[in-house]
Length: 136
Image (tube, rainbow, N blue to C red):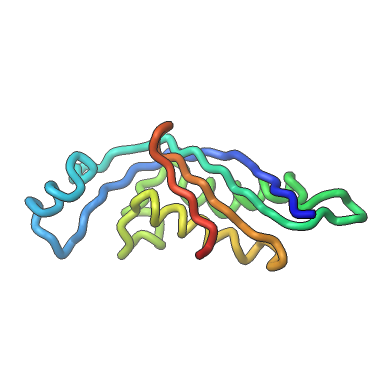
C-alpha cells in the first residue's frame, strides 16, 4: 500500500529573471517586470511529499519530524531571506525561475530521502502560480 506524506514550508526570497547573454530589451520582452535589475521578491510556499510503503514497525512512510528538519536545513536555511541570483550558488549560472527553483529543491532533498520512496516538490511562487517536480 503506497501512502504519500507531505510537509508544508515557506521561505521569502528575491530574484531577477534574466539572461546575461541577452540584451536588456530582449530580457524585458521575455521576462517583463521580473527582469527588474533591482530584483523583486516572493513569499514562496513549498510542499514536499514522500510516497512509499508504510513501515510495519513505525507506521510511518517517513518521520515528518525528520522531513521537517531536512527542509529547514537544506532549503529554508539556504533560501530564506536571500537574493537567489547573488547568494545561492545553484543559481550562479541558472535562471531562478519557479521551475528551476523546484528542481534545485528536489535535487537538494533527494539524497536524504530513502531511494525506495518517491519525492515530489510543489512550489508556489504566488497563490495562483505553482510548479510541480517529481524528478523526471
